[in-house]
Amino acid sequence: MKHYRTLAIGDIHGGLKALEQLLSRIEITTDDAFIFLGDYVDGWSEAAQVIQFLIEFSKQNHCTFIKGNHDLWCEQWLETGSINQTWLIHGGKETIESYKTFSENDKKIHLQFFKNMRLCMLDDKQRLFLHAGFTSPHGIGREMNKATFYTDRTLWEMVLAMDKSITKNSLLYPNRLKHYFEIYIGHTPTTNFNLDVPTNAVNVWNVDTGVAFKGKLSALNIDTKAYFQSDPVYTLYPNEKGRNK
Image (cartoon, rainbow, N blue to C red; front, side):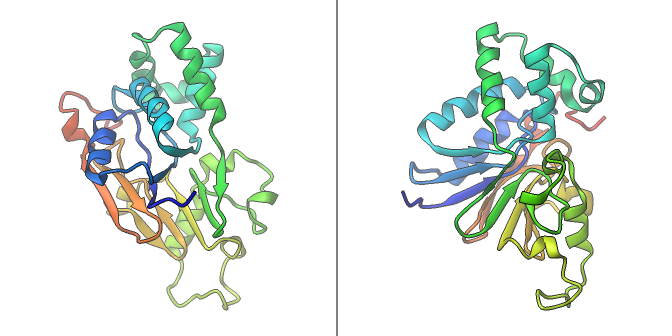
């Protein structure tokens, strides 16, 4: 099945209002495909509602869901009831609160949704999608620690720091970039570098535009590189702080 557009969507962090606003601005059709890059929860107050929305949305639309580090924390809590203290101070408290109106059966359905998420996806054009990055010079298949896929920041830091004169033919061109035509990530907010739009460096595209803090939710058309954005998410939740603590 050929899709009209394929859109990569950055970290959502519990911002359901931003997600709904973004999708309305995209003017989606049933021919569109969506690749969500992870971190659906932790930040704004509607984490559980985001998951419920995405479950329903995926019944009518072609979706791929990548797992982020925050999603793993939430999954562990839904499965065992144990609370990771690091998670708690990085948005977990708001996520737990959002589940108060959800039944135990709802939680089981959400747990399965988290379990079904992928750590990465490689399409037929050698475009790689994952939440954070990877470190192996041999590519994702040789990554010794798969947790890197949802925790690494060195990939993005490396490409941002690369001199523009370093091309694929250069001895200085990093081997880990050579395996893929393009790489799409979230995890490290572009707003950390004073950039508020999906940002390209070498062959890596970062679509996390700071949703959990003062940024917007973004979707990037991976073929045309046109992008769509919500309003700054904090303006949609005026009585909340998100992760701006």
